[in-house]
Image (cartoon, rainbow, N blue to C red; front, side, top):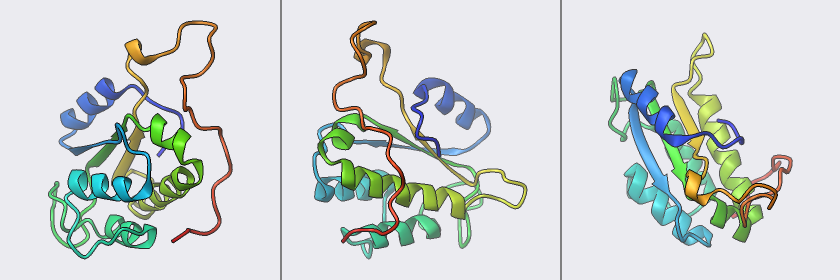
Length: 156
């Protein structure tokens, strides 16, 4: 996973060409943890046992046997791309929660990294579409999160 936003269309096209399963996690309008967890549950089709807390989300992302994909079943994680879109509003409204969410995603990506370093799970932070970008000389988009160090502990 990278904290540098990437263009969405080329990433989706490349993933599909490689036969990867793609999931879009749209965070448009999300302004709190409860709504974030609901969106994750819906987009990722999380099992019912996944509660609304960071540890449960982290556990689910290390399992992935419930998420259809190439080689689905126990231990399957190869060939998945999660594209997080419209994330800037949430990141700006809840920077501490955003940092924790990013940490959970980074841990899942690291967990699924193959022996040769190939990604079994890729998370992409989608860059804003051209019409959403600020005018030249006007600075970053409203609500863009500051670059901050990773958290050491998760919060409830």
